[in-house]
Image 1 (cartoon, one colour):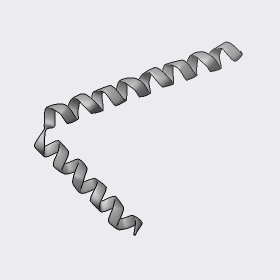
Image 2 (cartoon, rainbow, N blue to C red; image 1 turned 60 degrees about the vertical axis):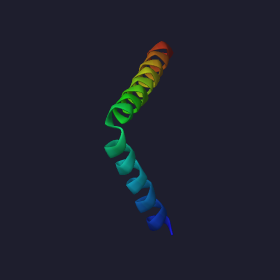
Image 3 (spheres, rainbow, N blue to C red; image 1 turned 90 degrees about the horizontal axis):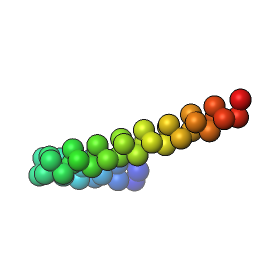
Image 4 (cartoon, rainbow, N blue to C red; image 1 turned 180 degrees about the vertical axis):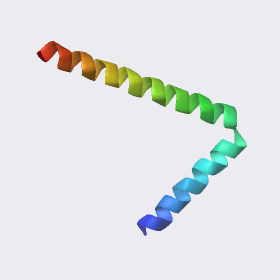
Length: 50
């Protein structure tokens, strides 16, 4: 069951990328920016502990 759900999710993501690549690229860029911000905050927190 998990394999079917995973394959379905992969198919939907691939369809989304093929259908609107600019929107997909912008979304990935936004997600990466959020992750970078989270990582910087985490580093700052750990540095403030020492």
